[in-house]
Amino acid sequence: MLAWDRFRADREGMPFWPVYFLGGNDVARDNPQIVPFTCPVTGKQAWAVPAAKPDVIVIHACRGDKYGNIQIQERSMLPQYLNVDMARSCKNLIVTVEELVDTEEIKKSPHLTLIPAFRTASVCHVPFGSHPTPTLSCTEEDAAHYETYVNASANEEAFEAYLDSYIRGTKNFTEYLSLIGETHLKTLEVR
Image (cartoon, rainbow, N blue to C red; front, top):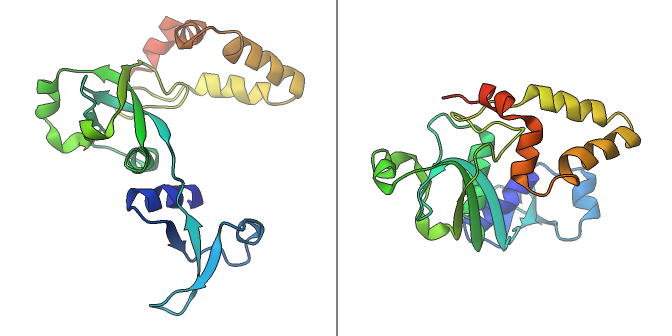
């Protein structure tokens, strides 16, 4: 939650976000940028967590239009709300989307447009852009790939082989997805 608080401070235009939960924590003790203070309202010990001040944020969302109006599905969870906070905290926002739709389609459900075009520097159509994690209402998580990753994490040699195969051995994201396989990816689609 501490990282999220840094984005919340940016979102609100504050130099820091006040938190109460760092007492006895090494993070507060070892980070000189986290400053303790006494809350002027409650008198309780609090800590000022500095704003993140990101220049560029890249997020993945369900859909958007060519102008950068980005829609987040109705059934949202913590990662989607963090994406919205990060989008509202940065100077430049790049969004990859599962679906690039016409603006008229966006207008049919304006309540889902949580990131308006003026916040977005660029929008790119990247199906399965969150793989192996899910994009709610669009794709499921890839449990088989998670298992591959976990097994590869068992030792350094196996992990290096995983990186060589899926990361360093691919020229781009399209090549990465081809390793996963189109047939397998189709099984992850929600729609």
